[in-house]
Length: 238
Image 1: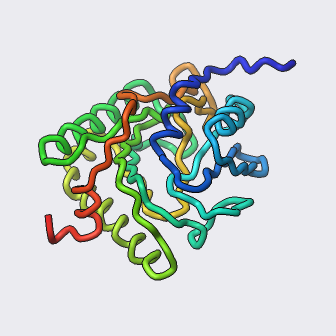
Image 2 (image 1 turned 30 degrees about the vertical axis):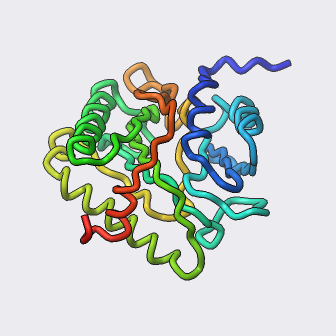
């Protein structure tokens, strides 16, 4: 039997699945430049862990951030998204595309993520969970489940986009200071790296190595931020 020698943290993978808290199904997408994407749809934790373990180190493993409709068999599209229960801010060091970060670049992204996390707590929101993706950081904000349908799909997309724009403006100086950017995450079918799997994006070198993605503060309990959801849906009331 083939043994996968690449680092893999099952606990972090399981915590990610529970944090996403999908109501229906979960889409996994395994990507590698030059190869055709592989998609798997799972509906339980054990299935997700099994797929992630199988592809770890062979491909970059991503999961759908938002809930997909029942019966989905392939990669989710905008019309397949039926629920919002998490917002993610993606902090990435500015560097050449498809290039792993240096240690210094990654440390800068982590520092910025920690500043944003602290600001959220001081402002009355729940502090997000921070995950190191290998090259940058993602901040996870759990929200109460909010149903998405054909009537509000575009509206919700625009509101998430507006929230991201607001956060970029709010941390404009810090983004410049740490030479980072906040990647767009507002599109409803957005996929995110499965935390606990190995990031093999780009070419690994001694200065810019591949890394294992991991949680900085592990999401043991999923505390939903009702205030943040209200702000995203109607910023004028907060």
